[in-house]
Image 1 (cartoon, rainbow, N blue to C red):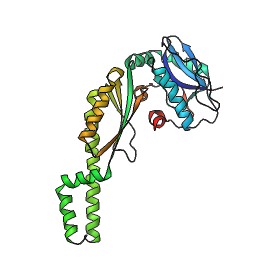
Image 2: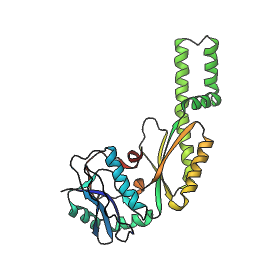
Image 3: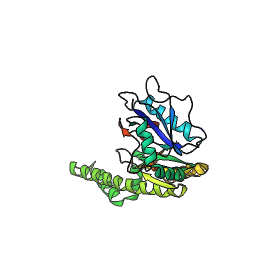
Image 4: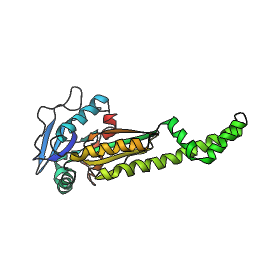
Amino acid sequence: MSTYVYGITATSHPALPEGMEGVGEPPRPVRVLREGELAAIVSDAPEGLRPKRRDLLAHQNVLSEVGAAGCVLPMRFGSVAPDDAAVTGVLAERAEHYAERLRALDGKVEYNVKGSHIEEAVLHRVMAENAEVRAQAEANRQAGGGSYDQKIRLGEMVAGAVKAREAQDAAEVIRALEPAAAAVSSGPESTGWLVNASFLVDRDTAEEFLNAVEDARKALPHVELRVNGPLPPYSFVEPGPAEPAESAATPAGADAGAE
């Protein structure tokens, strides 16, 4: 039977799971595979695994429980190896790399921050900051709303100004939060978000990071910031050229598990 991999930790981890349940219906018991100084948190892999909410939460719960007591290198949802031997084989092959990552990420958690514009607020800001947009809007008003071409022109000007504002605001969010983090990883771009970034934060200074988020919200009232965390450091594992598993389902990772 194939093996589902949740994460990698040290054999000295103080809270390796006992009696925990993972993905699948019914849930598969979570167990530990040991190889030298490393351990993989695994279970049997259910057939036809897909990123359903129940399994996403089960995956995240296992990592949260293990990560609460010590460092764990989280695998993305859907990481499946052919069998237990394949997992321990990669642990042996990549032992030095995984040990280095465990040392580097010890005591750290991830916060994912997404930002989007509040439509009415950003339009007010664009009008206040852009003289050309104000002039075109005033010309249209004096012309009784403006001709078709004038309306198109104003719409294009506003859209361009908002687009430029997105890039500026994304950079401002990163600048505001970066000093409170040990590292930053940009997430994939997607429609609706002007910024999608993950921050590696010392667990002991997480409050400082969250305070920095609140300060950014006050400084950028036209931007809605959503924070997801603390999470295992998905975006900072850097697994290297040899993965411990093959993806059997669409990777969901930190974002999907908490939305």
